[in-house]
Amino acid sequence: MKKLEYKVDVFTGIRPSGGLHIANVMGSVNTIVTLQKKKEIGRPMVFVADLHALTDAEPKDTQKNVIEVVKDYIALGLDPKNCDIFIQSELIEEISELNMYLSRLITVSELLRVPTLKEKIKKNMEVSNASVLLAMYPIMMASDILLQKSKYVPVGKDQQAHIEIARYLAKKFNKAYGETIPVPNILTLGSPSSIKSISGEGKMSKTNPGGAILLDDPIDISLGKIKKAQTAFAGEMTDSLDSLIKIGKFVANEDEKIKIEDIVNRHMSGENVMGEFKQTLSIAMERYLKDFQEKKSELNDLEILEIVKKGRELAKENAKQTIKEVRKAMQFE
Ligand code: TRP
Image 1 (cartoon, rainbow, N blue to C red):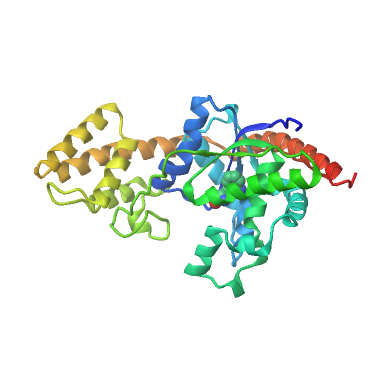
Image 2: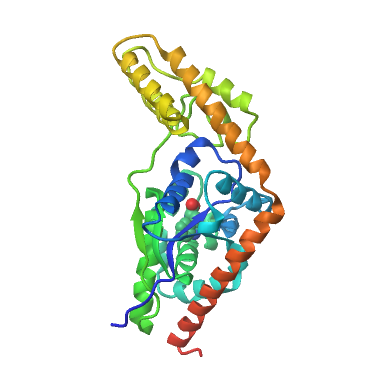
């Protein structure tokens, strides 16, 4: 078998939904930033998945969030010197073309079995109003990944089934047309931290802003939410408190981390220390948010446009090359 070469070490997509909250940062953003800092796995390529929005029933104004989300990631530690960033819609031709070829390698019923689609249909959607593009979403993701000949795709549990499909499609393509596309690998990064809403109901989510620390909010508002956050009775550990402690440790400096550990120990032995805990959390959070907002405000649009232009050149070049090889394998050229 011919040995196929990968072109991108670590590849991942981010949703331009706008307005990150702290649980987003602790989950996906931090994963990418940490991977980049470690450098063991290689240079990351990150793209803003703006075509994602096409699968929504209602059109959304995504484009204004595209620059915004790149700024968010850079302000949170993604270093544009050590990674490539591009916008997905810049590759619409290549993605569409590969979508078409890959689509013939998977059946309608296989797509309908994808857990993320099944869940959507169970929760808030009927097959009768799910668009074909929504069902094709995993194919689109496969195109993103395979066009770049990506080696590793770091994803949370919710996205794993999608990467399995990308692997499946790469293998099927190679089997049908000869070894062409290297099969990507899933990079599992432990279980994703599921941070609860700090007001006590469900997961932290933008749809329940009262329980979410939003990075762009005026800092006072976030500190007010911490004041009212759900904790636990002395001696008790609840999911809410556990989440709050994780948040605290995430935004804390070394001294504050030690302090939080100590407070938690005292709490578990029955002392009333939740006021003290919230105070420490507030101080750490205030500094964290200030730092983020300052860094973000220092970034200007032109600078970001320059970064994604550079990213586009590389991503486009990779994608064009892959399409060329794919066409050749299919005997179109
Ligand atoms: N589906 C991913 C999400 O919702 C975003 C995404 C699109 C992606 N294409 C990708 C992630 C390819 C990794 C690789 O977060």
